[in-house]
Image (tube, rainbow, N blue to C red; front, side, top):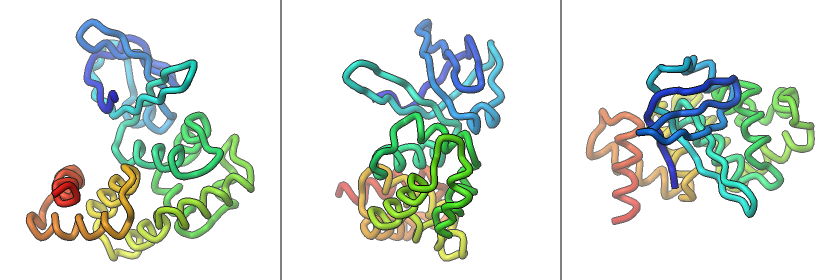
Length: 198
């Protein structure tokens, strides 16, 4: 699995870049949010988080400027029935991650259905399945209410997107924070994974 690439930009379009990594050109599909965040220009260096999606007739590489974007993408394609990579990319292109989280946490299907390619029924399914299957809406609501720091909230969502249950993810993060209270999101994820795998 290709999870991150670091190289030089060869080509850049709003929905796709070509990245030269040690002489190999990788075509990476990106959402508009990533394009806006990294402002890619040919010749610039770039480090990007990736997900390799394999189907029967294609292998497609998707890229994201942050783990948070990648986490939302993976939640959508893994946890919501009927949502594939193209709709997940449309969601990320259609609104900032913070707005998406807020809409899911507040069950605001009207805002979600304004995203191009997302109808009201799909928006309702996103809210229902993210809330009921993995408790994501509760985690986002708790984070927005100040119950959890953004680092622990983001770490929890990352663990959930990897397939861990919300309850065990939260316990592992609390244990990780007990070891290092000043840990950032990445350090928390690594420490929590060690707790979960011990």
